[in-house]
Image (cartoon, rainbow, N blue to C red; front, side, top):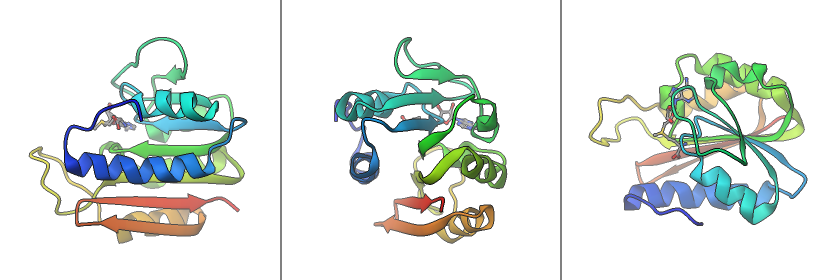
Length: 168
Ligand SMILES: C[S@@+](CC[C@H](N)C(=O)[O-])C[C@H]1O[C@@H](n2cnc3c(N)ncnc32)[C@H](O)[C@@H]1O
């Protein structure tokens, strides 16, 4: 990857996410990162795979150019005028105010067979911020309630979780 990791926990989270993304993303894929921030991961993914990348974030605007960018919350993904093969988020789920609404929007905007990948810290992790992280079982339940199938949850070393779900 062409971005650096602030610490070992972040390295582990990004490595796992990157492994999944590079397994499923094709040059023809249309990929959305919600809560993309400066979009370092998405830039690297587009460069490596040749996919079409779209980023969204309500507060941070990445540098201009590819990938395209929408100033929206994850819950507002329905306003982006295209459908996706892959929607992913990294370290942003705990910022999302209405996660069930986001998951319902995500499944509606995914093409059949599309993937949702969510990497975030786990409940109990202390990153030195006044932030609350979610329990993996709760995230899984919300994804199931939204209608996702083929769910896989990876929890690593009590630091981070990766939900990998697919729309039938
Ligand atoms: C820790 S940063 C992660 C940025 C990027 N995904 C990365 O890995 O570098 C969390 C991001 O979530 C964004 N965010 C805050 N509220 C959000 C929401 N409701 N929906 C989506 N993203 C949100 C913030 O603006 C911020 O860019």
